[in-house]
Image (tube, rainbow, N blue to C red):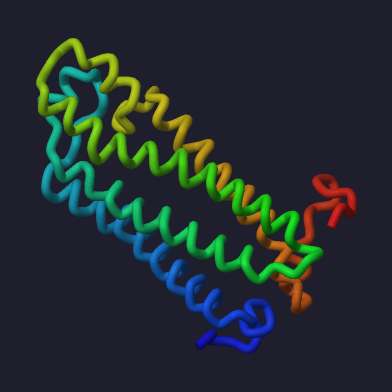
Length: 193
């Protein structure tokens, strides 16, 4: 059952409501595990050294460094569930933006999932090989490297999630507060609702 009367008006489909709430809880769990808890475990068990190159990274690598990214998988799934639930209850006038939110969410999922698969599976496999010729690949894909393409992928993935959230906001237009929040700033949207 949905917790508030406003949610019941916005999400009349109880299955969608339950699915979205479960997704919200999963997102929160993913944020906590991939953020404060995961990072605390990493820093307590084996604090990674600052990036100086792939060779030093391989020497210093510890499997615990993947824990935050495993929490990220829950965050990805939770966000997908929330956006799907929101989109599924959009009324006909909201469907174009709700559909755009699903497409932007798919971009987020694809980019961030790729990044987290690299961090949890690909990078550890390359490290275990202990082959110096793999250094350029490790440098390119490890988030430990501040110049890695993985950071650009992460940035654009979360930009997609931001766009998805903005597109989905139109569904929340029942109360005055929801209407105010779901409206675009005048310089971004010339009344194209």
